[in-house]
Amino acid sequence: MSVPADVVIVGASAAGLTAAETLRRRGYGGRLTLLGAEPHPPYDRPPLSKHVLAGAWEPDRIALRAPEELTLLDAEWRLGRAAAGLELSARQVVLDGGERLAFDGLIVATGVAPRRLPGADLAGVHVLRTVDDALALRQALLGGPRVVVVGAGFLGVEVAATARTLGLDVTVAEPQPVPVYRPFGERIGALVARLHLDHGTRLRCGMPVRGPIGAGGRVTGVELADGTVLPADVVVLAVGSTPATGWLEESGLPLNGGISCDERCRAAPGVYAAGDVASWPNPHFGTRMRVEHRTNATEQAMAAAGNLLGDNAPFAPVPYFWSDQYDTRIQAYGIFPADAEVRILHGDPADRRFVAAYGRRATVVGVVGWNAPRETRMLRRLVAERAAWPGPVGQGTATGNSHEG
Image (cartoon, rainbow, N blue to C red; front, side):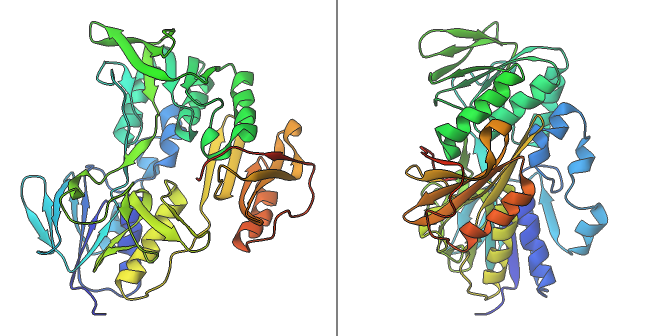
């Protein structure tokens, strides 16, 4: 395989930056262009729902690299410019405005876009994906509003925890029976619910949400499917996301819940994908997945860049993610299928310090730690080594209804 002379990376966040750094570290000396829809240099997203939203960190603290480090990459940065199309046969990326960037090698790291609901255009309704979103929401919270968070996935519960820490009146509306039902199922989700109830957050779980409602162009509440209205001055929509692939719809690349890649992160000859936008068959678990977690963005970008240079190596990680809420840190390794059995391997949920394992098809496929970082790091080897299930007998077992994470 010949080394490409011109590499274009679409997406200038964590995955795109890591891909560029990997190429240079591996000795790539060709032309390198990074295209980013946001005007900001690469920054870290996990702190947005916590430290930045709370006002504890200013935006400059989440920069992934100092300006001089970005300069050393010897790359052409096109920030504030979105990709509008891809012409595979011509090997060109089309920018908004019609400009074209030629490439021999392409890495797509465009991430995801937040889903919205009817009524999302009302003043006072927010989403949280970018640093500008976080700053706008932070400003809105300064007035002491009644807050309704729609969606109790990890983003939703983190925003709720931050708002409650600021002393605000917070309600979370979630169609599933408990928070974080995806990925963890009812048992762990019930513990997250109790955590939030203990801190004064109101939960309305198990009822579909119709959407925000308002008067005079401003939000006044959130309507549930049974007609109940939850009063609100600020509404945060945390109802999931969709892969940012709209610009690729006419490209000929395989798109199915993301950019469909092979196990080497390749979507087409010379075209690779990394991070939230990429779907690939993970050989470690024998299943196709798309992972929206910060650690995967970095690891997959390294793999994609290496394979673009000719490594030809399958990408077979054990996904890892974490969530901070109040004084609790939840850590997770692996996947969490709907038909998995859950077993406590360390500690006791009643003490709010434990590690649980998820088993499926006679194999440990996931580990979740709750305020037990050392034990969770130790027990993650069960996933990495495909340990047999059932493993060591803990303090109890339960059947979990969860979804792949």
